[in-house]
Image (tube, rainbow, N blue to C red):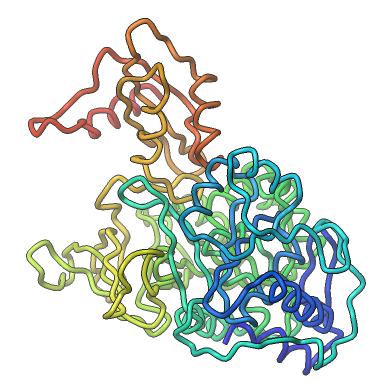
Length: 501
């Protein structure tokens, strides 16, 4: 299970580097020892099996040590967006009520100002700050404290994502559901001890599950991309070279930035052997260029909502010049069964479309605070076409849930925040453009006597939404267009947004 991976690797290759981050690097023996020290600290603060541990830290080796410590106690960890506004974090904390929040003192103070003050671990047990790795103690069995005694079906972590109601939902994964993906990915990537994985995704994004745990299965190393480098095209290309990355995994938007502005297509990356992407459609033109530039690299298009981590996979070989559609999302992965179901309830046949239904071991336990999933089945809301060879072609979302630069966006949530502004009577949001050019456009009906500017609305959104959900443009209207059912006519708005590009 997840809590054993670092310890097992520490026994096999104690001096091998496990994680390299902005705060330094740690070997497997060091990471194992740090996790054991944190087990004792968390236990003293009241963390027990079945509890939740919130982690509001920047991407770091330290954050991974906390994850391991929580798992070893039988607790679940909940990574929180380090750049989210305190109001949003307070809202999430009220939802999952952690026994302990691991964070920086100044972040805890920002929560206290809002009336939220959970029990908090603000420093390493030795008193150092979270930006600094302490000298690792020598591993000692008598310092390991209470250890995990649960089962594979116990909760391991919660990833918060926006739901169809506009309220954040906590996606709950067990050790078993996470392992279904991790073990499949390790085999598909043929991971070995000399591999050097990149971690581009933030820890609260499901792509990071692969980055963190797959290398741990083989004693390989994971190299954390600093936040300030995440969307720096030249910085990312240099990161690939400096860290001699062998396995890369990110949203297509990051790779397209590297191609367009970082000269990735003019750069040799001899160490790279596996390139994976997920989270959004990779436009076929740029993907063809990248595929041709890296002929010896294994390309994999992965698909799956956070509720299943990954559902399908597709190996991208040579892309013909005649191909104008995105590459398929492939076939079922991780031991799952993935079926496209027509509106009449029948499985879609070749040439037919249907909603993707995933059944199998990587499906979540359920949403935090909601009834558990009892049949390991999740209806994704995504529509796919069944191709002649059995692969699936992604068509689009069934509802208003969209993705911008790889981040899952719920337009209802954005609209709810906009409408809470004192100068806004009604609001609707759409996504205009595609790929790295995708952006969020708001249409608002001002309250009489008010004229909220784009800056005003951005500031308002920044108090409640993660950065990737903040609007990019605003248009004022006397009223929102509506269809015959009285609902906002989003197709009309989308068409208008395209005309205004």
